[in-house]
Length: 69
Image (cartoon, rainbow, N blue to C red; front, side, top):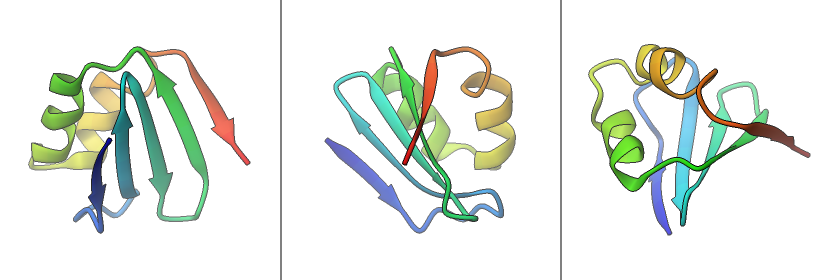
């Protein structure tokens, strides 16, 4: 498991990657899981100059997801 907490993003608070599952916690407290995400894709997300823009372009609508309650 790899955690990125306290991201410098107005949209995303934290991201956790664990064996292909990417768990995103948004600033408003919502949590979603994205499945089939490579470690490389996770690292690109947390290294992006704009985490939110990168998420919208490369993660949000490209992987199966479910809301975590």
